[in-house]
Length: 423
Ligand code: DOR
Ligand code: ZN
Image (cartoon, rainbow, N blue to C red; front, side, top):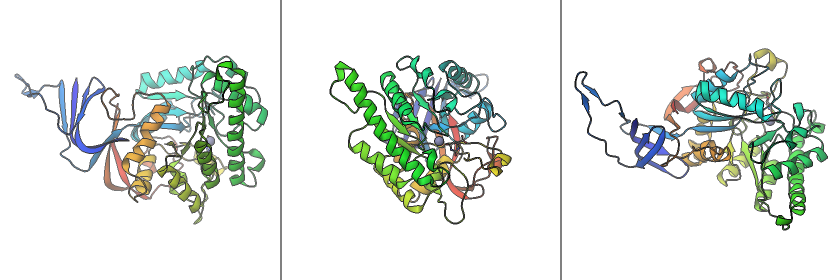
């Protein structure tokens, strides 16, 4: 079956033009300003068009076709806390937000400590809901920060990421050894940078200290790996795996990451929509970890987006019940809010082009998850999202598919409505 999308604004990381996209059996086969349609075949008895060739003419209205988004950081709470979110509601809210791929954190109950456990939920997501779920596994068993023996049995390239998101690994020796193992096995470490010594008193220091430590240990571990491998006697920054920082929120942390990148280290990071959309000022103390910061932090994060120090925008979708929130659980839902918040704050206000936003919400994270999506070019999967950019609307949490309703953005006015996710 073929589908032709015509007269629509096509935007990915390198293109932004009015044109057409032809899709055949789920794969993009042609992208051009004009694509000829075959003569319509009339099926005599019914007078219908040939259903093997569908034409969708958008007549140049203010709609945009982008590659569907990929989220590097979400919590679906399945198993263990499925009353907050489960695979079904998580996939539904992802799809409504324009996402066809999500990378899930392992802080469930039980914790995802093994590839077998991860494969189970990944396969279920594909079979039942048709989207890509990558389930990360823990860096330390049960996220306790001590035992990492389960990593030693992994085969090279068997998994993409490990993380102790929600906590981070506090012990330097443990962390350094984890880096060494991950370098050998080509696994990316996703760091939740929080030094627990300072969590109760100074959350800025907690993030900054741990960011500095992880960069330092990662560098040392690479040198260690280089030394023990005679083929790599000379240290190379791209020795193998890399370090990725989750939800970077302070100007100091982003500066350290920029510096490490300048030195040639393979360090990347993600920023959440909420950390660039809101500050902790004006009485906004909605609890999230890391916390909402200051305007000067937002300025630094936006600057880092403009300079490509930030690799991806990730939601940190963290569903919680009202009772959990009252008791101080950190986090907010984000999958259905990411695009409108980012479009309104970053693109509509002129900080970024839509192509730059698409690069961080789709192209880059898709590449990091090794997916054949994230660009609208021949050969890629036809995973798209259609949005009406100039449609202003009020966020209404009760229209969302997530089981949880925890967001401080309910009731605010935004632009950029997702109208369809295609996959
Ligand atoms: O706010 C947060 N919530 N930050 C995290 O790192 C964990 C997450 C959660 O699991 O609720
Ligand atoms: Zn985290």
